[in-house]
Length: 308
Image (cartoon, rainbow, N blue to C red; front, side):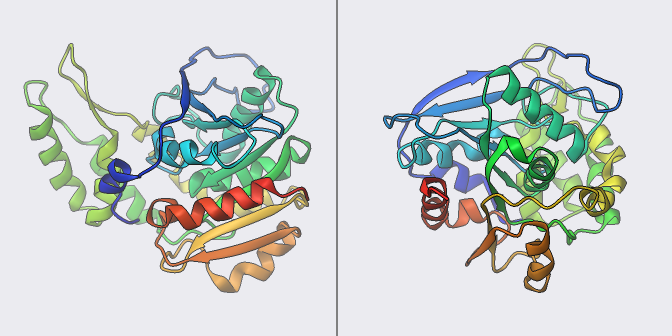
């Protein structure tokens, strides 16, 4: 991961119309599929008539809908679509759940679309969100008009389970006194996380630290305990994906040349899973949409405006 904090503050995109909504009601579904949660989201609309299906976006691990704020504002000026930036379960302002996997996140998205009467949508996801969107497209191809996958492979991930376990262990074992100031708590949390991972990843994770204004208690916005529990199951993603048929709708992958999350030699295998796909390489790391926002916007808007 590349440093994110400065990028979040400095994206030069104009303001757009935003509707912020948080829903936390749970609904009972069949025991054969995960119980979906109602997701928190921001919606963006521009001046263009919304003549095409909306765009739904999922962020990556430790992220939130805020990661897509600048991109979403800019996109609605270039496409005839509504844009939803969504907090996935166990992240941001969406409900915490005892289950965290691509199947569950797909059911959340299906419920999201049903509640808003969207028969289909364009879907875009980064990293963990990209894997969820790939699963969703292959599970429910009739709901996906087109697919955008940002810097993630359906075949493998570069981080070892051991390294990620160390990060989560540092997060869940963090014990900060409510009497500490936010700056004091951030300093201690950062020092502890630096023992588990590199500086750039720590900066990104630290965006999750919260302090209750009433009690002073510190917490993580993401559900670190559950994410750690399901960590070892992330490795089973490909076998679960292989049970589903290929997604034949229009698909584009946007990847960073300096990121280890997509390997060029995997592309022929990926094309078998997504036969109507193309790939774009930008001179960037894992956070390609922050490092190369204008190039990213051009690729995404042109893809969304195509009629294929």
